[in-house]
Length: 210
Length: 132
Image (tube, rainbow over all chains, first blue to last red; front, side, top):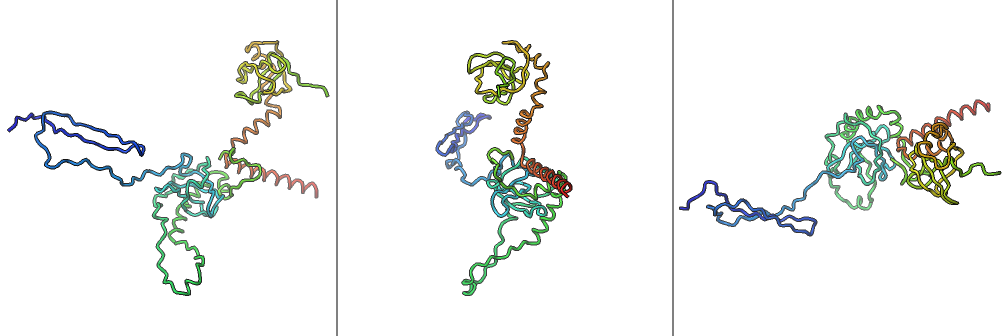
């Protein structure tokens, strides 16, 4: 047989193809330390792993001004104009928000960052437990398929009355119990959250600091 | 109605335009019809030639000679208590009020609204008492 060096290493050349900036292709060739001719070659050529096209979910991008406890002004939707407390950012990038319900009627709800003004006012919500809330909690429950008879078809879509599940009500109460304490700790905060935001004649929103 | 505020050596002026706008300085020398030399060692205005269109004359003056040094000027300001006198004028108070209002947050504006309502409630109550 061949005389072999105790320290010989396999010669290996790895080509890694990395896609950079959509149109640049960088080839990185890294070669292992070449010693004497290797003793062992694999029977088949070793294929370099192909780049994975699995979608990678990054942490949601939240504006720097929005942190748990920030008072937000909702700009669109059913509760537009309401001032509301931000509880946390969910994985989808939406913000978890609560009125508190007792103060302004806004329940625990998801809200998009784009439709929100973040004020610089912050409340200490460290004692409020919102760990159980995530995007699945708010996903629509599958309604049982209603058998479509002719009468129902011609009756049209009557607005279905909103049914708030008991679980939601219980969760609301639990969160608001600790949230209200945090709100009451700040003077005039309750009245502030109860009041709605609106623009009047002399307001220049591009010059206003929030 | 003769003029009372003259553009003279020693006149305190308010800079209206430029990087030093909002600060007060003294006229130290007149250059020509349109320009003067100002200096404000106490208020942080560099000694510079500035056109009259960029400044506003105030009622205050200090006793200095033409081309006074910054050191002399500073002493003259301290003697005349210029800074305190300026801040006591309603002009200066209005300027600082505008500045403060620009920095109010949404929560501050809410507090102001509540305070205004409370004030007018007190006044209305008093008016009722007086008119009864």
